[in-house]
Image 1 (cartoon, rainbow, N blue to C red):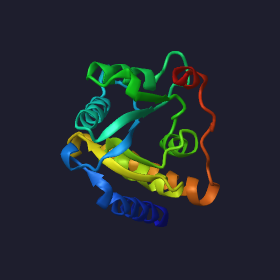
Image 2 (cartoon, helix red, strand yellow):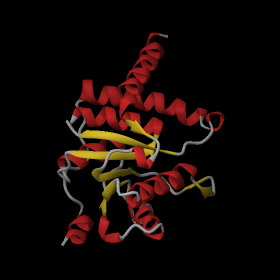
Image 3 (tube, rainbow, N blue to C red):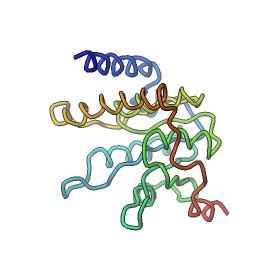
Image 4 (cartoon, rainbow, N blue to C red):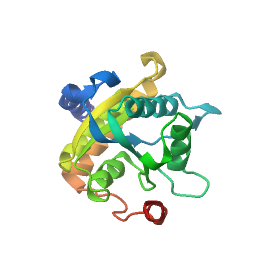
Length: 202
């Protein structure tokens, strides 16, 4: 019971910490050089993942509104059969974002990796994180740990009644984020630039 209370308290603290730095309308979002688009699978249970679709549309909206000048897509591309980053890049291009303005981080296997690598590998000091509100809140908590100045642009979420399981998992993910930062001092699995990203930057 004590553990559950601690997890809920941590969940609340992370949400409260981020609340003043979250935006929902592109025209109200402060301008920033780079948007950090957090990856997820395009398909879930045989259908297009609603979280994926909303994130892609939100990132494209920020770009077309002139709020960001480039988008860093960070996701899991750990095998040749699963590549979130390239898929997201392709769909951003279809929404009118020029490929030259999209950077790819193939090693964003966890949110911690995506956020830490934005700072430590890509050398960014300030970003707008693009994801659903619950995810942005955790990403901003992680960003604070590496002195990455981050705000969040919240993509459309699913109705609360349809996302109870996801929200429950988020509480556990936030507890893990606390443990990663304050107990284990967890670092990204890699602090190297993927060879594919090197080739693209030449």
